[in-house]
Image 1 (tube, one colour):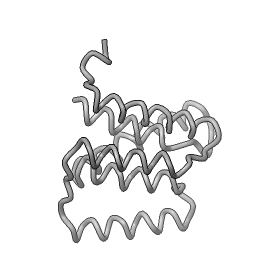
Image 2: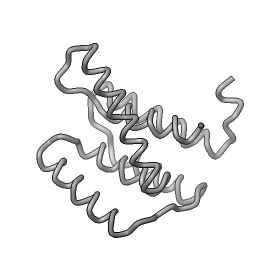
Image 3: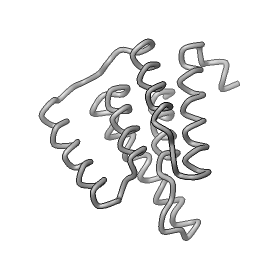
Image 4: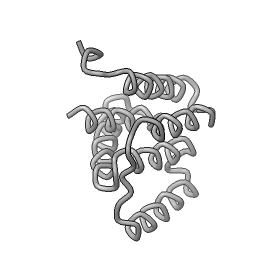
Amino acid sequence: MFLNCIDGMELSTFCLFIYICLQDLDNQIIQDRFFILLYIDLHLNYSYRIEYPWMSLIFFFILAICYAKSFLGGADIKYIVYAYVFLGFTHMLYMLMIANTCGLFYMYISNKKRIPFLPFLVLGTLILFYL
């Protein structure tokens, strides 16, 4: 039923999302070629939504600090940049709030200190994209 509302272009994006989620859950390593495929898919199938350039610079500076402090992995940063271009700045912030809420809830019920965060980022993107 869910796949009935997805056209061919969205299906390729959806499949890439699922694959990188499974890779992150399995070994927390995602090869760069899958992000290249996501960016190619974005370029071919969707319009860009770059907005608020000064806020974007500040936000990416904060992301760099999070990466340096090991709060986020490299794949998480790459995906957040993808989500910024795909969703736009405002919706990306909503996506991060959804992902953080779901991730914190999962950490609470599983009693884990470190979790693969990319599946929650993808979940937040899918929720925003299909609502």
